[in-house]
Amino acid sequence: MKSTIKLSIIGLFSLLTIFSSCKNGPQNETKDSVQNESTVASEYTKGQAFIKDDASTPNVLQIALQSDDHTTLVAAVQAAQLENVLVNAGPLMVFAPTNAAFDALPEGTVEDLLKPENKDALANILKHHVTPGNYSKDFLKNFKKLGQANNQDAPVEVKGDEVYVGGAKIIGSISAGNGIVHIVDKVILPPSQ
Image (cartoon, rainbow, N blue to C red; front, side, top):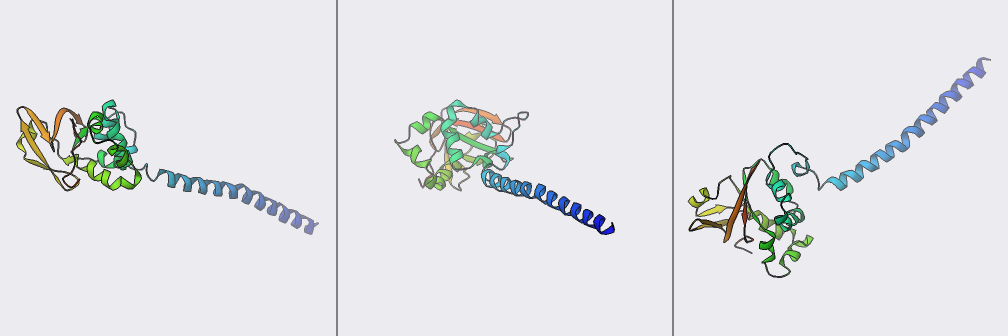
Protein backbone atom coordinates (compact mmCIF):
# COMPACT_ATOMS: atom_id res chain seq x y z
CA MET A 1 0.00 0.00 0.00
CA LYS A 2 2.83 2.40 0.90
CA SER A 3 4.63 1.65 -2.36
CA THR A 4 1.43 2.27 -4.36
CA ILE A 5 1.00 5.66 -2.66
CA LYS A 6 4.69 6.48 -3.31
CA LEU A 7 4.34 5.55 -7.00
CA SER A 8 1.15 7.61 -7.27
CA ILE A 9 2.81 10.64 -5.68
CA ILE A 10 5.92 10.24 -7.90
CA GLY A 11 3.70 9.85 -10.98
CA LEU A 12 1.61 12.87 -10.05
CA PHE A 13 4.74 14.91 -9.38
CA SER A 14 6.18 13.82 -12.76
CA LEU A 15 2.99 14.80 -14.58
CA LEU A 16 2.93 18.19 -12.89
CA THR A 17 6.57 18.74 -13.85
CA ILE A 18 5.89 17.78 -17.47
CA PHE A 19 2.80 20.01 -17.70
CA SER A 20 4.49 22.97 -16.11
CA SER A 21 7.54 22.68 -18.37
CA CYS A 22 5.33 22.41 -21.46
CA LYS A 23 3.30 25.37 -20.33
CA ASN A 24 6.33 27.62 -19.69
CA GLY A 25 8.61 26.43 -22.48
CA PRO A 26 6.84 27.59 -25.62
CA GLN A 27 5.72 30.84 -24.01
CA ASN A 28 9.29 31.78 -23.17
CA GLU A 29 10.47 30.95 -26.66
CA THR A 30 7.68 33.01 -28.20
CA LYS A 31 8.26 35.87 -25.80
CA ASP A 32 12.01 35.88 -26.53
CA SER A 33 11.54 35.76 -30.31
CA VAL A 34 8.94 38.54 -30.22
CA GLN A 35 11.27 40.63 -28.03
CA ASN A 36 14.17 40.10 -30.45
CA GLU A 37 12.05 41.01 -33.48
CA SER A 38 10.64 44.11 -31.82
CA THR A 39 14.10 45.19 -30.62
CA VAL A 40 15.48 45.03 -34.16
CA ALA A 41 12.41 46.66 -35.70
CA SER A 42 12.27 49.50 -33.20
CA GLU A 43 15.97 50.45 -33.00
CA TYR A 44 15.33 53.21 -35.52
CA THR A 45 12.14 54.43 -33.88
CA LYS A 46 13.58 55.04 -30.42
CA GLY A 47 14.09 58.42 -28.88
CA GLN A 48 12.23 61.61 -28.14
CA ALA A 49 11.05 62.12 -31.70
CA PHE A 50 8.74 59.13 -31.45
CA ILE A 51 7.01 60.06 -28.18
CA LYS A 52 3.41 61.19 -28.66
CA ASP A 53 2.59 64.47 -26.91
CA ASP A 54 -0.45 66.47 -27.91
CA ALA A 55 -0.43 68.78 -24.88
CA SER A 56 2.78 70.82 -25.19
CA THR A 57 3.84 73.41 -27.73
CA PRO A 58 4.97 71.60 -30.90
CA ASN A 59 8.73 71.24 -31.32
CA VAL A 60 10.48 72.12 -34.59
CA LEU A 61 10.04 68.60 -35.97
CA GLN A 62 6.32 68.52 -35.16
CA ILE A 63 5.84 71.87 -36.90
CA ALA A 64 7.45 70.48 -40.07
CA LEU A 65 5.40 67.29 -39.83
CA GLN A 66 2.17 69.33 -39.65
CA SER A 67 3.01 71.47 -42.70
CA ASP A 68 1.86 70.53 -46.20
CA ASP A 69 4.57 72.87 -47.57
CA HIS A 70 7.41 70.88 -45.96
CA THR A 71 6.78 67.27 -47.00
CA THR A 72 10.07 67.08 -48.90
CA LEU A 73 11.98 68.40 -45.89
CA VAL A 74 10.29 65.83 -43.64
CA ALA A 75 11.13 63.02 -46.10
CA ALA A 76 14.76 64.19 -46.11
CA VAL A 77 14.93 64.35 -42.29
CA GLN A 78 13.51 60.83 -42.10
CA ALA A 79 15.90 59.50 -44.77
CA ALA A 80 18.85 60.98 -42.84
CA GLN A 81 17.36 59.67 -39.56
CA LEU A 82 17.67 63.08 -37.87
CA GLU A 83 14.27 63.19 -36.17
CA ASN A 84 15.71 62.91 -32.66
CA VAL A 85 18.11 65.80 -33.30
CA LEU A 86 15.21 68.14 -34.05
CA VAL A 87 13.37 67.41 -30.81
CA ASN A 88 16.30 68.12 -28.48
CA ALA A 89 15.79 70.68 -25.74
CA GLY A 90 17.46 73.36 -27.85
CA PRO A 91 16.89 76.13 -28.36
CA LEU A 92 17.20 75.43 -32.08
CA MET A 93 16.69 77.63 -35.10
CA VAL A 94 15.68 75.59 -38.10
CA PHE A 95 15.68 77.18 -41.54
CA ALA A 96 13.01 75.09 -43.25
CA PRO A 97 13.00 75.11 -47.06
CA THR A 98 9.58 74.74 -48.65
CA ASN A 99 8.73 72.03 -51.15
CA ALA A 100 9.11 74.67 -53.88
CA ALA A 101 12.67 75.36 -52.66
CA PHE A 102 13.54 71.68 -53.08
CA ASP A 103 11.82 71.63 -56.48
CA ALA A 104 14.11 74.48 -57.62
CA LEU A 105 17.20 72.26 -57.20
CA PRO A 106 18.56 70.65 -60.38
CA GLU A 107 16.41 67.76 -61.58
CA GLY A 108 17.15 64.48 -59.81
CA THR A 109 19.05 66.11 -56.90
CA VAL A 110 16.47 65.36 -54.22
CA GLU A 111 15.88 61.81 -55.45
CA ASP A 112 19.63 61.17 -55.45
CA LEU A 113 20.10 62.59 -51.95
CA LEU A 114 17.29 60.42 -50.57
CA LYS A 115 19.13 57.22 -51.55
CA PRO A 116 20.55 55.31 -48.55
CA GLU A 117 24.10 55.52 -49.89
CA ASN A 118 23.89 59.36 -49.77
CA LYS A 119 22.66 59.54 -46.16
CA ASP A 120 25.82 61.32 -44.91
CA ALA A 121 25.71 63.99 -47.63
CA LEU A 122 22.00 64.54 -46.97
CA ALA A 123 22.60 64.81 -43.21
CA ASN A 124 25.35 67.39 -43.83
CA ILE A 125 22.99 69.53 -45.94
CA LEU A 126 20.17 69.25 -43.40
CA LYS A 127 22.45 70.12 -40.48
CA HIS A 128 23.44 73.24 -42.43
CA HIS A 129 19.83 74.37 -41.88
CA VAL A 130 20.07 74.21 -38.06
CA THR A 131 21.81 76.48 -35.59
CA PRO A 132 21.60 76.90 -31.81
CA GLY A 133 19.46 79.80 -30.66
CA ASN A 134 15.96 81.19 -30.78
CA TYR A 135 16.22 84.51 -32.59
CA SER A 136 13.52 86.38 -34.45
CA LYS A 137 13.98 87.44 -38.05
CA ASP A 138 14.57 91.05 -36.88
CA PHE A 139 17.17 90.01 -34.31
CA LEU A 140 19.06 88.04 -36.99
CA LYS A 141 19.78 91.38 -38.68
CA ASN A 142 22.51 91.84 -36.03
CA PHE A 143 24.52 88.86 -37.32
CA LYS A 144 27.03 88.59 -40.17
CA LYS A 145 27.07 84.77 -40.07
CA LEU A 146 25.64 81.84 -38.15
CA GLY A 147 27.51 78.72 -37.03
CA GLN A 148 25.45 75.83 -38.30
CA ALA A 149 25.14 72.31 -36.81
CA ASN A 150 27.42 70.86 -39.50
CA ASN A 151 30.30 73.05 -38.18
CA GLN A 152 30.16 75.42 -41.16
CA ASP A 153 29.01 79.02 -41.29
CA ALA A 154 26.08 80.45 -43.18
CA PRO A 155 26.27 84.16 -44.05
CA VAL A 156 23.48 86.49 -42.94
CA GLU A 157 22.53 89.36 -45.27
CA VAL A 158 19.99 92.13 -44.81
CA LYS A 159 18.38 93.62 -47.92
CA GLY A 160 15.88 96.32 -46.97
CA ASP A 161 13.61 94.66 -44.44
CA GLU A 162 14.37 91.13 -45.64
CA VAL A 163 16.82 88.72 -44.01
CA TYR A 164 18.71 86.09 -45.99
CA VAL A 165 20.60 83.17 -44.42
CA GLY A 166 22.94 81.34 -46.76
CA GLY A 167 21.20 83.07 -49.67
CA ALA A 168 17.75 81.88 -48.58
CA LYS A 169 15.14 84.52 -47.76
CA ILE A 170 13.16 84.11 -44.53
CA ILE A 171 9.52 84.23 -45.64
CA GLY A 172 7.89 83.31 -42.33
CA SER A 173 8.61 82.24 -38.76
CA ILE A 174 6.86 79.94 -36.30
CA SER A 175 7.74 79.68 -32.61
CA ALA A 176 8.35 76.14 -31.37
CA GLY A 177 8.57 74.51 -27.98
CA ASN A 178 12.32 74.04 -28.45
CA GLY A 179 13.18 77.06 -30.62
CA ILE A 180 11.93 78.61 -33.82
CA VAL A 181 11.30 77.56 -37.41
CA HIS A 182 12.20 80.12 -40.05
CA ILE A 183 10.58 79.19 -43.36
CA VAL A 184 12.98 79.89 -46.24
CA ASP A 185 12.59 80.04 -50.01
CA LYS A 186 15.79 78.16 -50.93
CA VAL A 187 17.77 75.11 -49.85
CA ILE A 188 20.86 76.37 -48.03
CA LEU A 189 23.79 74.40 -49.42
CA PRO A 190 26.97 74.15 -47.35
CA PRO A 191 30.06 75.82 -48.83
CA SER A 192 31.63 72.42 -49.49
CA GLN A 193 28.63 71.13 -51.52
